[in-house]
Image (cartoon, rainbow, N blue to C red; front, top):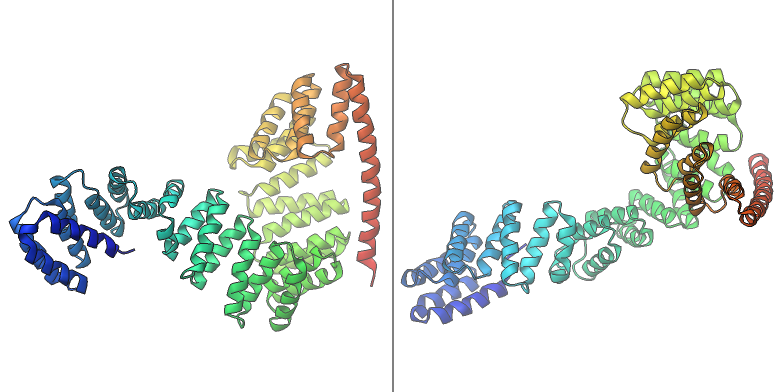
Length: 515
């Protein structure tokens, strides 16, 4: 971030006109300034100032020279003097703002730069410095507002361009972010570190194809770096192309056979391609590579459960409990496996152990409450979650399951309160809307029930249960024609889903047991 040389030339021309009587010292000072001899330039400018001390333009030029010499306090005093001499002058505000920005005095810098722009809105440097000050202050939306007036300067400053592009992504302004990035790449370009930061930000904003271009570039610049290859594989997978990710990961797995990160991602890619045997093999190797890594057990057992190998999954978790660092997550997974196996008593013990290990995590309470619900002990489940709600931060799962229990116990007011809380926390999740619709129906509030069920259908047009409930509402409201249409739709969906489930089951069995 430097004072632009053209600014000095323009100011010098103004000063030459304003102080023609002192032409020689000023001309000599400008000669020294242009050579970079700022000490001699300052001496000449001070001599010129002695003859005409009330010239604000000259005092501003003195401030610029002092800034060049690193005499920031003196420079700031000169800028403030110039402002006092001529409050209408824009340049001293801008230059003072620049110095304050360099000193990280962002609030004062913003104030001076805003004043400069109010006096001359066409000064792109004032907009540029103000954009930087806003970025440094975390005021991203205000920084973006300066982009249209300072875009070229931003694009010539890779550091600021990186911050600006990231701010645009945070604000959802993806087009501006990509434009800034492309412009910098066509000029000086980013460093590898900056490219990585941008690629991650683009990927987080679901701009996977744009991120992929950066990851490809980094990998091409460092072809021997396994990290660059690994990141490129992730980028290909995130962009929806498992085929391109697979050979990269296969090669890396041969090169680094004990790296669980590579093996885990390889398993995920195989799984995405439908090759469950290869996926299970990769997950198994990941567990063996690092028995302390909890995530490896979770990935492996999730797929084992998907193919109905619950005993193998339970056995693996038992081993993990002896080796892994985070046993809480494994206890919760073991509880889920035992539920699938129908061993409710063992599942209860697992969730109780999880709560003992970490009483500040919600999942254990929710899992244990579901066990009590399955055992028909709703009162104990309600009491458990009521206690958890009193001591833990508000949580979607906690509110939702508590609402279900209260609804089951005909505690309508508490059910509505909890389910509405869950709905507010996750408005695009279907289940709270559906359960609210059922509670409203149970209390005869058909209009409210219909609103919630309509929201379910908007989120999931094939939600059979919601359509069936809507069918009942229309029948109760006397709209037989609409009820019949919905009933036909429900029947069609049930048949379609049944056929799909049968086909999926056949495919799952084939994949699990074909050698």
